[in-house]
Length: 99
Figure 1 (cartoon, helix red, strand yellow):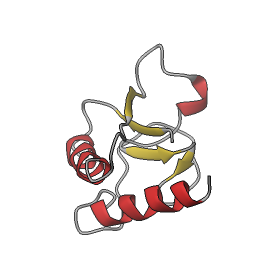
Figure 2 (spheres, one colour):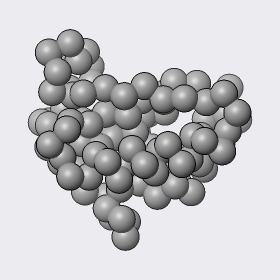
Figure 3 (cartoon, helix red, strand yellow):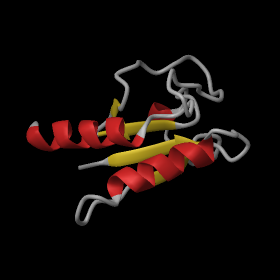
């Protein structure tokens, strides 16, 4: 399973998003994620345009939303303004079953 955390350091929601993803991933054995700075020159072109933070599981956004047109801070419609731990867990489980 390929899990990617896309963010940039000046985004105030990057850290809460990272914390929720870490909490979700930690309940699974041997599951990790790759963190990608979407403003870094070495960021692949295919990942540019996502907001910060974005969580991709096997290339699909954890919320099902499409990629945007530009880099910006991304605010989710959740109390914490980032993907909730349980929703991330649910998407990981769904991706596991789809294998």
